[in-house]
Length: 215
Image 1 (cartoon, helix red, strand yellow):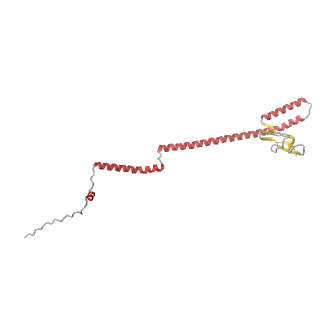
Image 2 (cartoon, rainbow, N blue to C red):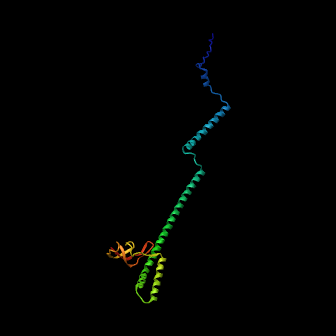
Image 3 (cartoon, helix red, strand yellow):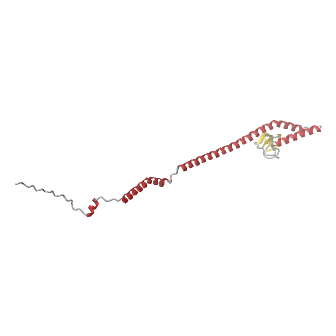
């Protein structure tokens, strides 16, 4: 008698009991073309937002970033301001140089004129002495007077003036006291006699007046 083998079918293991919600979570969700497009669009928007985020932060921090044209215009304006400032400085320096040169020129001219006049003052002194001398020759006296008048007129045209002395108070800036006398009728430091007239050109003394001072 043949032994009959009974095929024993092994029992399949059954999964543990699951709830409908858990089973739904384990099952892959079915995707449609529309859902895929929406997902891709959402992903693109998210990438664009992430790319713009540094730029937004930069704008919030420093303001709007200037373009290349704006940077070029700003550089040109800066260069223009520097050139304008340099131009104004040069103009101011030139104006100062012009004034200083004119002042030096006037001073040199005044010094030369004063020196030239001082060389003619001895002629004035001799003419004055000649006028003080008595003479019977009226023509000679008239001629000397005319020369003296012309000489004084020339000095006036050059701006040369005689320093006032007689009766004035002694001033060391214009007078040279060579003698001193006590006189109760005269004031203190009063000039009572002039030995040699003094002259000045403007405020510059060409020659000090040689005088006698009382008290």
